[in-house]
Image (cartoon, rainbow, N blue to C red; front, side):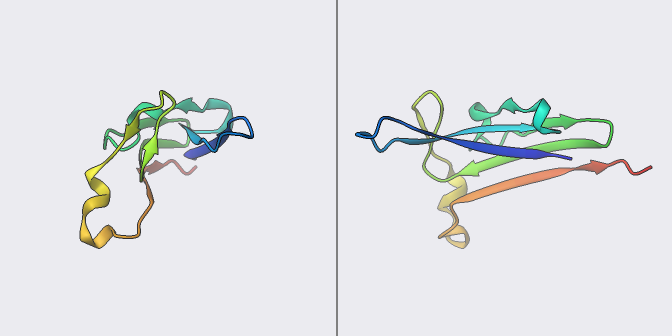
Length: 96
């Protein structure tokens, strides 16, 4: 099964910085950072005994772990006004 988690990093109380750490994996024990692929359209491949596929993520106004804001044209379409995130998963589950 595919999974994505985000952890908030909140700085000192005098700062209002909130950042996501975006990870993906086939289980919580196999999560890896996918920060660099957020808003790029480049999917992260996922493979396990029961799932094979890929995941891509978009987060509006996303600021990566490196502090750089990664904008995406994904959110500029009129039919996506008001949308702030999108998680896209494609793949096959193996049932026994």
